[in-house]
Image (cartoon, rainbow, N blue to C red; front, side, top):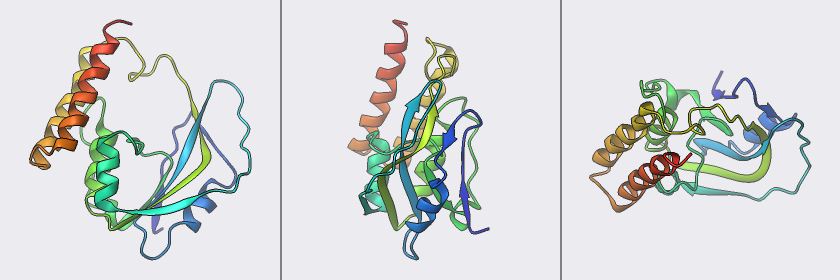
Length: 173
């Protein structure tokens, strides 16, 4: 196929999830994104009148680094041709951020929809929610490499410090 979508095994998607993502994947769009909603047990998706707009790949990279664009691979429809030479790096955390960063660097245009079509199951035992573990420092390594690639732009430094702050906050848990 031409496209790839990721869904975590414990999450759920709306019946319209793929159709909506594909509908927003026009010829000049390199990535189609929707929003997610958190749930613990049951979830209901509500039909809304979504707002869809496009941004440049450079704006998407900035949004990713500033935490405005979801770092994970879910809620997205990727062009397979742009993923062909990319792989998830061997970081225990932030491997998805690193992949998306390199994917977005190839994008001309990204479609963003505010429709919540992905259900993210909150899991208190996940690595990103757990109290501090040394493996969490892998996120700093991934972001350091991104900052180097961005010639230590102010946006990449802000994201690096956001990750460090997140790790420090987990020390209190």
